[in-house]
Length: 441
Image (cartoon, rainbow, N blue to C red; front, side, top):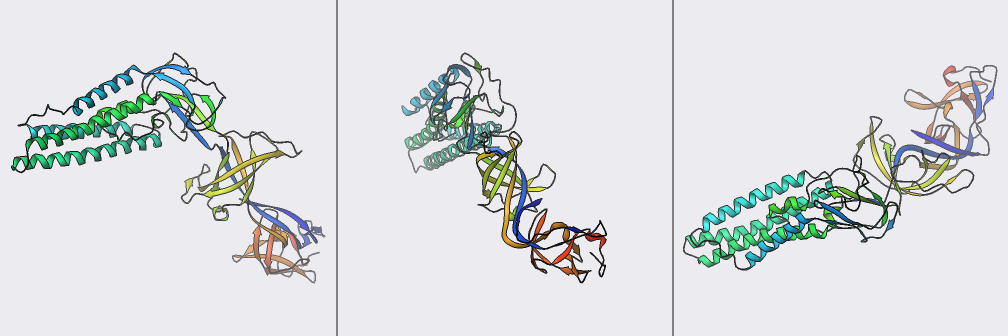
């Protein structure tokens, strides 16, 4: 709902009582009005990244403790994973074997070999997508699915070339050696992708900070899913995914973190969240604005923010953007999210307010409209009649209904654009008790 803060100058709308205590008369004044929209919100960090184990193993080094400030790229922990190392060696051996020529393809079994290779690849890609879709973090899930898509496309291109050559051999238009080379190339595509993924997993066993920030053990989300090793059999991936992808889930999800007691020597499963890096260099506020007010909230408007955790403190904020699509409000209605940049705060006595922490509850008082030196009347003086805003003017001691056009509207005072002027006397209390022609004091 909108409220207003007003500093009156000049003639104010002062209530004066008469014989009827239910009806009060005052005068229109001039003043400054600020229309405010209140919106509940939550403090946000610049980024929150969780670092997870890319494979089963043991924590052999933990280079940080809770509360440490770290730089982007700094080594935070190291995991030893014999299974990941073994898969890398197997993938390297398979790739080296194919690089040696792949002479295992029989000259008389080109079609059969092609079919078996296609079937194995299709099964592997389907398994890879199934594994990727079980990943709960949307950023990580999208990255894995993109790997599978790229790998499948690369394989299909190689397989199509091999298939065309096999057909040409059957028609006597190409040599067997050419078809064998094409089939080997398709198999090599799978082996190369498996090797790249296995190497990425081993590289990711060294957990590095994806950004500067403050470290805490465990994470804001217990969600975990298949790791790179789960996708090796898919023969998928272009090998271009950075080593940080399997360990960093990006923006935090919902739910409790893991037991933060896991330390050096602790066993971890693939996907276990070990650390969280929170970048608090820029704090923001995610506010929920009711649909009836969102059109008034524009980028650049300022706000005063109050935190539940810091009673009496007021923080400055500026709207950066608003969402186009709505979300369901916690109050049951439709709301739109506004993103604000949060600045420092002060207490009423001038003391600096403490720095907020991500996740804290807040209320943003958004200053959506303002006007200076405007004609103003108390909000209680305005009533609706026949779908029009009106007031009771006092003419020769009698009430006369007059339609008015309002501007900036607040809880206590409203701007009047037309229908009366500063100094005009009107009923400011008990408008429902007044009728046309009624004598008023």
